[in-house]
Length: 249
Image (cartoon, rainbow, N blue to C red; front, side, top):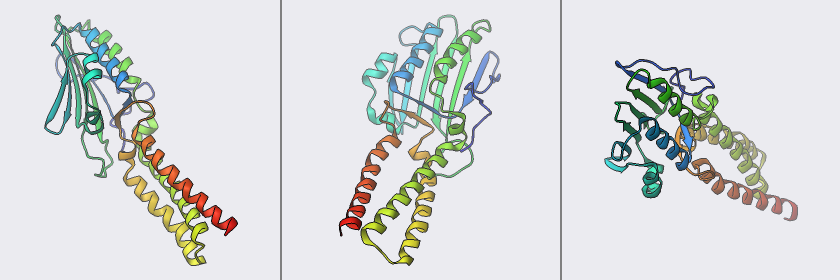
């Protein structure tokens, strides 16, 4: 994964003019809680002064749609499964003065397809009176930037971090197995060289699954946290069993 544009530390890429009256900013990656995303929705509703029914949050999961018209509606009725499996998430609002904001978070490639381009696209479009656009765009971007990953993560750090964690897990597993079963030297060499290498490549392959570019989840419930809560106790149990056998026979 690489960044779609040089977004820098400030957040979204510089604005570009797509259509007359349009201001479009784009980046890849967004991480936040449902409440943080709801805050973004509230800001969009505020800057557009959208009336009831003029704001739509559209969460697409395959051919199915979950539609909401307020941030509170989104928080109250959104299914947890939608956040784990959504294909796209779009917010659109139009106010009485013609000001319109459209935010889209979508996947452009499945996590299991390797590539050098981003897996996701986060696009913000602001349309309306020229005097209104800069203020509206600045307010929405300020809220949206709170969920942007670091430049390191947006430039592929999720893949390398996953590979590093997997390699460390492979080394710990190899140590535990060698202590538990006490294999001969050839097997020890194979364990300590082969296992981390296999785990490293597995981690690199699964990097965009373990650390997805776009993820909306409560703190402590992100995917890598759930995986570590499962894997770490297994590795700890293996090490304890190996040390116990090594020390006490």
